[in-house]
Image 1 (cartoon, rainbow, N blue to C red):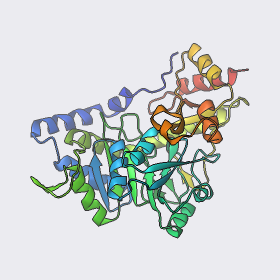
Image 2: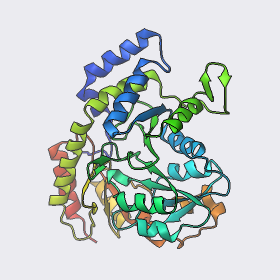
Image 3: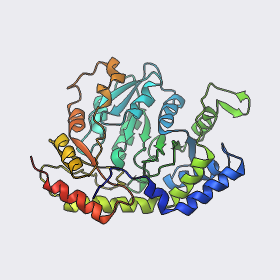
Image 4: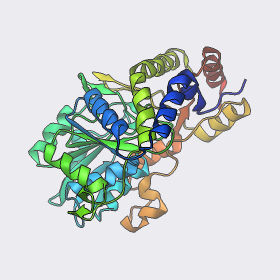
Length: 365
């Protein structure tokens, strides 16, 4: 039995007729940009997250860098971000000329208020919180801390569609919540896509203008903006998938629970969720000191896995200019050397789950 790390076609097959009909309707409409499908999805997604507004954009990276641009964060400003994150979040900061300040994660793979406060300086303007792997970061203390120091909060929710803390969803705690709809996400499109969610109506108007060449009205450009628009086809298909998101997340939770209950190999450390959080398990990430050997062992048994992420941003070539060498973020670097994402996706069958569990339990030094 072969178990892939990811299998995207199953999402399409689950609601094939709806997706095909929606695509045909949009293609035959003759309206492919900034139409009713985008408006409908933005309204539905804002309601789902619990914010007043949503703005559809071309990608998750666009959501991040445009957010920092509109918040006025730029050259010389500092933004605190956890070291163990996908590099897109860091790029969202540095594209604007601001400086990413890396903080170490806690045992939950997340950022804590205590760690954030260590890095606050007179140049700090914002904190970027990443709800990594679909595991929700508790936000109460972080919100209180940022209010104390008058800092903006940006949430990177690219892996946390539907995750929540004390009844509030990821993306609804900060000034802006940034989402990616890359196909592998819990709420994935059939191509690139992204969005921001927010409550501030003034900021909302700025996003609407900025994403469309800085134009509130055609050919009337008030600012130097960009072209970043979630197209009608992706918006329409996302609208269908959004209807089933909670159901799909519940399936992921059942698979994660099965992993928790049945993976017993002492060489593996299982993820540790925070209390009072509802997690959506974009990835199920274990840690193993012999990670590379474990991955080879699984591959020899036809089970594919992924490392999220083998090179932390501060050690990447792109951020060499920050001067942060190996050893500067030991917790982050330890995670990069030991984490492994197991197969977990909608449609992963019970026999496939059992195969993964049995093989993991067979691994030895």
